[in-house]
Image (cartoon, rainbow, N blue to C red; front, side):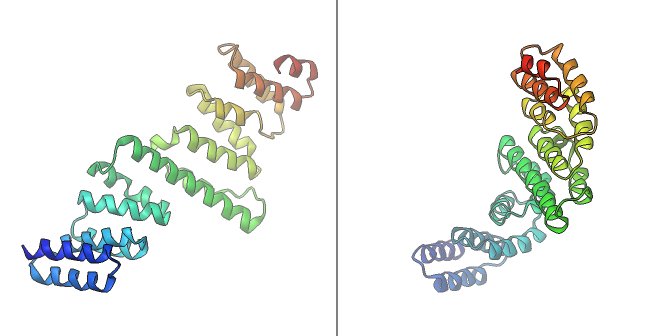
Length: 244
């Protein structure tokens, strides 16, 4: 069993800090057994991850994946490398393969996908602010939104991130339309909270919409707070006091 012995020796050398010896033993492992490329490559990737050398690890994994695109353990290592490199684009592109190979629990993959799309939305919004200071040209962030899979378009935190950035970029009217549509089907205290902070030309329309929600949710704390804020925007002081 020369292959197994060489791989074990390479790992032992790595743990002792002898990287040169570890690399030499990996080469010997590769030469010892025909068809050992996958086993040697995965071992090398594991050692690179342990050393936090994620870019080098990624290069190895990408090469191996060309030969075995659906290898579960390889995909699990790939997920680790992408996460540590914060390569959110690649995570979203590879998510289907992650799910198909069942490399993690459904909840864990859902959380990772949510985190990735939120990071991409944040990055797009930051780029707009950096290049224009403040602009109603939201093309960069809209492109990300258009790419979202159906499940993420219903995700409360993703919707909040997108509409919050629309508000900051001067597109409160668009944010209002989306929030109103979402809240009609999917109640969310955090989205209601954001609804009360939008700056639109006709705040009276927002107040009417929110008061309609109150009919079915008369004791909803977040809604009452939002109604108070919207009443202030409409200079309805007595009504605002009652809601507060």
